[in-house]
Amino acid sequence: MVNIHSTAIVSSKAIIGEGVEIGPFSIVEDDVVIGDNTRLANNVLLKNGTRIGKSCFISTGSCLGQDPQDFHYKGERSFVTIADNVTIREYVVIHKATGEGEETFVGENSYLMCYTHLGHNAKVYDNCTLAAYVVLGGHVTVERDAFLGGASAFHQFVRVGRMCMVGGLSKVVQDIPPFVMCDGNPARPRGLNLVALRRRGFSQDKISAIKRIYKILIEEVHPKDELIDILKRDFSQYEEHKDFIDFITKSKRGFRRVQSK
Image (cartoon, rainbow, N blue to C red; front, side, top):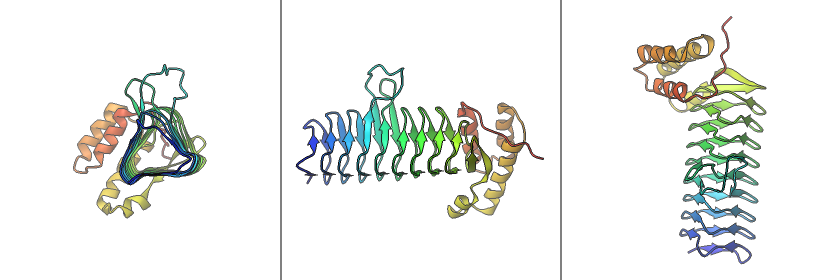
C-alpha cells in the first residue's frame, strides 16, 4: 500500500514501490523511481531522472534531480541515484549529472545531514556520513566508510579515500589517501584515522602496515610509478595495499605531502 498525502503532487508515470509514504506538498515528477518502504517528508522535490532505493528517508525541503550547475550541461538525460537505506535530512540538494546517461550517486547506508549539497557527477559510496553543510563540487568521489565534518567544502574532482575523516570547516583542494584524517584551510593530512580502524577490527599488524604506508606516501617524496612499485613489493600481503594503489592510480588532483622533519 502507498500512502500519498492529499496535498502532494505525484505523477502517474512515476514508479512507486510498496509501502512508500509521500508527505504534504511534496512533488514527484514523471521520470522518478521510488523503492519499497521509502518515506518522503513534507515539501520534498524529486525531479525527472531521480532514482531512490528501498527503505530510504528523505526529510523536509530536500531537492533531488535538479539540472546541474554546469555550463557543459546541454539538457542530456542523466540521473540522481540513491541506493538502499540512505537517510537524507532537511534541505539537502543533489544535482543530477552532466553527460548522457551519467549519474550522481549515493551508496547504501549513507547519512547526509541537513543542508548538504552534492554537485553534478559526485559519487558518495556506502556507509558514508556527511555532516551538516558539507559541499561537494562536481565529480567529487567519496569512497566508502568516510566521515566528512560539518561545513567542509571539496573542490571539483577531489577524491576522498576509504575510511577517511575530514575535520569541520576544512577546505579540501587535493585528494585524501585512504584511512587518513585531514583538517585545515587548505586541508592537510593529520595522521591516520586510528579510531575507525580499531572499531572496524583491523589487527595491530595491519594498522602498523598502514602506518608505514602513510609515512611513505605522506612524509616521503616518490614518483607515482615508484610508489606503486613499493606498495606491490613490500605490502602485497595486506589487502589494504590495493586501496592505496587504486587511490594513486585514480588521483587527478594529487595529494598533499608533509615533509618529515
